[in-house]
Picture 1: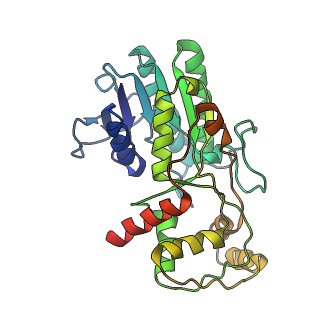
Picture 2 (picture 1 turned 45 degrees about the vertical axis):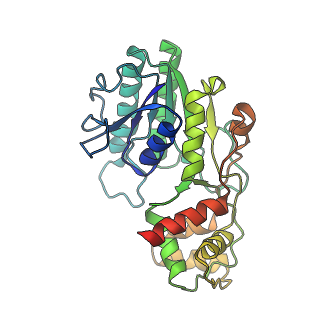
Length: 310
C-alpha cells in the first residue's frame, strides 16, 4: 500500500509516517517546504490551487493532517476566512485531486470541537455538530464537503475527531502543565470534578493506521480517545506520578477560579481546566475491532520521559 501523508513533518505526522512504515506501508511524506524527510514531496502553501498531482501518483490512500490549527485569542481581522482557506478549500482541493488520481481512501483528521465543547455528557458520532469557533466551523464545513465529494466520486472518506493529543514533543498547554508539575508549584485545582478525554500520540497513529486499511472504515466518522476520561486533578496526579514527584493540589472552589479567570481576562483558559469534554470512543472499537495499544499512564510516562530528555 502507498499512502500520502500531508503535514508529515508535524507532531502527529512524523509519528504517523514512522508507524505506517513499520507496518510495511510505502509512505509519501508531503510538506509545505523541504524539511529533509526521506522521499518527501514539497507542495508549497495549502490552498484551493495547490498542485498535488506528483505526490498522488500510484497512491492508494491519503491521510490529511495538515491544517491551520486552533489558536486561542486569534487577533487576525477575519480568522474564519483564514481557517477556511486552509482547512476547507485546501482540503477539498486535495480530495478532488485524489479522486481524479484513482486514490481509494481519504482519511481526514478533523477535531472533537466539531461536536462542541463544555457539556457534562459524552460526545458521540451521532450528535448534531455544534462547532462554536472559526477553527471548528472550518473543520465541520470540510467534513461536509468531503462527504459530497465521496458521493460524487466514490472516494472512501473516513473522518476522525480527536480530542487533545499528547505525546513526546507535545507543545502548548500540555507542555506548560508538565513544567508546572515539574517545578513543584502548588496548583489550586483540587476541587475540580470534571471529565476530559485525551488521546496519546501512539494510540492516535495506530487508530489512523487501522482506518487506512480496514474495509469497514469507509464512510465512517469516529471519535477517538484513550478510553479513560480523567479529571484535571487526576491528570495532574498522573503526570506527577510519571515524574516521580509529589504534587500539591489545594482545593480552591471552582467558582473562585472562574471569578479569577474573568477578572484576569483568562476565562477561556480556566474553562479548559474546569469544564468537561469527553467522548464515547466505543464506535471505532466495536466496528473495527481497534484496541488502543497504550494506557493513559503509559502514554504520560512516555510523554514525560520525552520532555525530560529534551
